[in-house]
Image 1: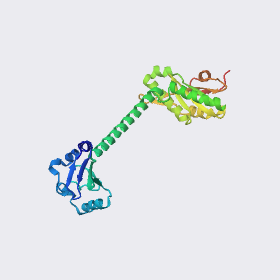
Image 2: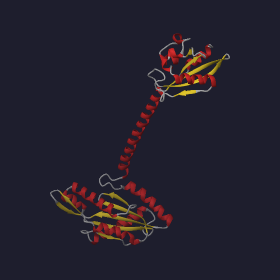
Image 3: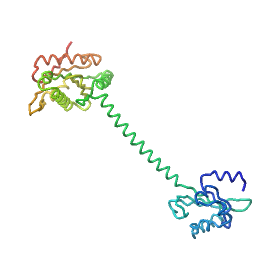
Image 4: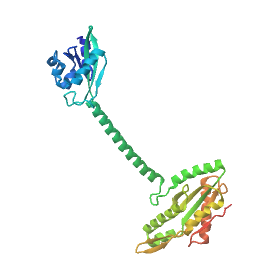
Amino acid sequence: MDKILQNTLNCINEGIMIANKDLKILYWNDCMGYLMNMRLEEVAHKSIYDVLPSLDKEYFKGLVERVMKNECKMFFSAAMHKDLVNTDKKLNLRISKIENCGQPVILFEFIDVTNQFLRIQQLKDYVNQLYKLNKELKEKEKVIEQLAYYDKLTGVANRTLFYTHAEKFLDSAKRNNSLMGLMFIDVNKFKSINDTYGHEAGDQVLIKVANILTQATRKNDVVARYGGDEFLILLPDIKSYHNHNVIASRIINTKNKIIHGDGEEINISLSIGVSFYPDDGENIDQIIAKADKAMYIAKKKDGQDNCFCNDKIS
């Protein structure tokens, strides 16, 4: 065999066996030697059935004869013909008829799919690892987002997230020429609660207030802790100035108390001020300032019970 052709076949990563019309082995490459653990010198001019006795099957012989007569090609998969080649490796086998100096010879290609299966499994493992890593990253992103945009104590939006939503809803109100409301809520006598019952009780009060406000609002409303004992509620796309009354009524009529320490009750009262776009400002800080002023008017009216003021302040 031509030396260049032989070197080329030895570089191919599949077993190549060539047999004459009598099925005597003329050549097999280095990969074939590796697969079968036999060198070319050991098998040359021997019958393929002597060298590979597992091929000595009637149906296989018949198919080889068809290849010789009809010049068709045959393929045997490792999955369907596991015992075709006596080896622990999974081998696909392709059989073809070729010409060599005018004489027909048969080309046997043994394709080792064992490594392919291993590579597929490695790929699956790699994909699973990527999936787990992606899941962990998403969970960390959620934690980071929670820390960045939500109040750690109460779980409602912080000022950063509030302003993000507020600017978006304000722009929408300007485009659509619609109303937007804002409620400014303050806990009455909060310093006294902290001084009397301690900061742990004060924290419980803030958590209770956040829950009251969240339960009283609509799905698209934004509840935020503005700072200390101050909360904001953003009311986007309200139809009239009176729409906020339902929410204010829910807040005021909620039983605002917590049980602290040895069963001692702490009553919670809130002062609420309301402002609106476009009447009370062109930007969110102006609207907040108006609601803050309205809240202080409500607080002066009655600092003991829940109260609110919705008068527009000029």
